[in-house]
Image 1 (tube, rainbow, N blue to C red):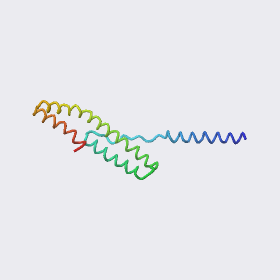
Image 2 (cartoon, one colour):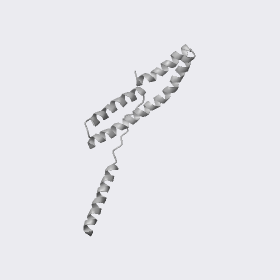
Image 3 (tube, helix red, strand yellow):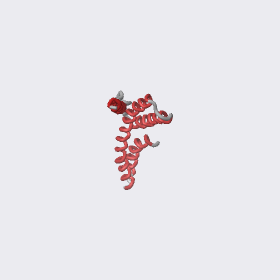
Image 4 (tube, one colour):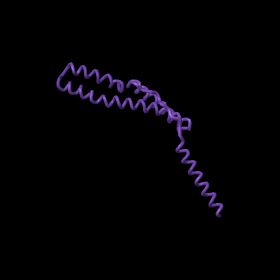
Length: 125
């Protein structure tokens, strides 16, 4: 009886340790593709989201699939950071256009509108 209890405890601890080891597996870390422009960020964001969709649409991902997703997310994080930075700067630019148009400032509206569209059209053409 004591031996059986010991074997059960050993099996329980071994199973728990294997589960923890699987959760804590360290993966190779990647830099991802560096993103310098909003246009590039949007392109990479779209392309890499499509790659993840292909993997996930196959059904339950394999370990190899999980590794691919992990690698892809580095580029997605870089792209999303650039998109977020550019979008944060876009709101004040839109406000400048808004104010210029509100007060009928034609030259300023033209200038601010062009600046606004330089960024905005990279997101939605």
